[in-house]
Each structure stands twice: as structure tokens, then as C-alpha cells.
Amino acid sequence: MNTEWLRTVSHVLPDKTYIQLQYFYHFHKLPNLKNPKTFNEKLQWLKLYDRNPLYTIMVDKVLAKEYVASIIGEEHIIPTLGVWDRAEDIDFDALPEQFVLKTNHDSGGVVVCSDKKSLDREKTVNKLKKALKKNGYWYGREWPYKNITPKVFAEKYMSNDSVNEEIGSLLSYKFYCFDGEPRFLYVGVDRIENGNKGELLCTYYDTEWEQPPFNRPDHRTLPFLIDKPVCFNRMMSFSRQLSNQIPFARVDLYEVSGEVFFSEITLCPGSGYSPFYPLEWERKIGDWIKIPEAK
Image (cartoon, rainbow, N blue to C red; front, side, top):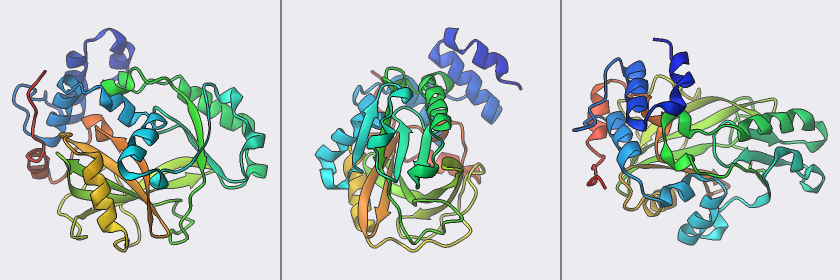
């Protein structure tokens, strides 16, 4: 099934119809939205019916910093160096020799600058201009993204010497939380190619730091083992606080020299179109999501 036609008419289809078609393309069956059972079916239900207005703030990478700081403390927030409405307005001269540029509304608009003198500024601006024109709502109908005002922002460059420089940059610890309780996580790192975010490599762990009996086929396993971080208990505590009273949220954190830093909150990983294997775990993990009463 080719989805090109679906993208062409996506702006005129209602959310439910579009979600059903996208789900059918990825799973070869329609989602059970009346009585969802699996992890990804429940994510589709939450996209349609769990309309907490706080979610838009939580997924906006600029606004989320203030919100998260109010819960876990400003010292766990990566410093912001600047925010701009247009990529052309980035004040490169005012930025330090190392920094990271991101867009606040998507995951692809990332430029990692480890040496400002070698940064191709024109290429960087063009990349971010394209990213600013995207609206992630239309691909997966994740409604919290629909009304975010796109912006570019610069963050302090963070590094951890324990990461193999040939593999990527900073390790990210992504906790899958269900009603405020982290059940498992994956440790991931993006390959950095010419300063740009590249292929994701990751390994899943349960909260006892054992590898669970499931995985996702769109994730490549890290080629080296990761030691349990010394700040793991703090990570667990922060994940609980940031996902409290939310049916499902993935809380992404960094560890740098024994300190915990906030990365982002994701409410619908893979937009709910990426299954766990073996497939029996789609149902087992789905059981951890308690569907709230539809408003």
C-alpha cells in the first residue's frame, strides 16, 4: 500500500479516518478504537480522545523547559542560549564555540555544532528553515503539536566522555511511564553525521537493569553495553514526577558527569505505528495503559 495519496489528502480527512488508514498501512488491520487492547491501539485512542491542554506545553521543547523546571528544578534544565522565530535570525556571532540548534516542534530539526569555525551557516539555516515549515500533527494526528508556534532555539553543548565518539554524542535515557510509573526504558544515542542527527542506536532495559524479552524492529541495538548510571534512582524519581497522572508518557533524560538533565517528553513514540516484538508484548505492554474516561 502506497501512502503517497494519503499524505496528499491528509488535510481534508478527519482525525479518526486518517488514523485508521495509517494504522492499517503499518499493521495490516484496522485499530480497535472502541475497546483498544494493544500498546499502539491505545496510543491511537489517546491521540483521539485524551485532550489535556497541558500536553501542548509538555511537547513544545521551549515551553516544556519552564514547566519541567517547576517540577524537578532549574538545575536539571539544559541552558537555552537563544530563541528565534526565523532561522535567518540566528545570531551565530553571539553563540559560543560549541552549541546545539533545535526546532521546538519536531525531532529532525537538530544541528550539533562542536566547532563554530567549521559550521556551514548557510546549510544550517536552510535545514532549519525547512524544519520550521513542518507540522508534525499532519503525519500522525498528534494533536498537541498542531498549535505549537514553530521556533528555533540554541542550547548549551553537552557531552559525556564515556560515549564512543564514533557512535554518536550524548546518551539519552528514555523512560516508558504508565500513570506515573516507569516500567522500562531504552538507552539510545543518535549517530552524528556532519553535525546532524542521524541513525538511532539503542538498547532496552527494565527497571532492574536487565534486558527485557522484547524490542522494536526499527531500532538498531547499541554495539556496546551500558552500565547502569549512578543517578538512576533520581532518573526514576524524575520520570515519576513528570508523568504523574498521565496514562502514558515517555520521559527522556540525559546523564552528564553524574547529573541528570531533562531532554523532552514524548506522548506518542513513533506516532503509535511502531510495534513491539514478539507481538505478544504489544498486548502485555498495552495492559499497562489504563484508558481514562473519554471526554
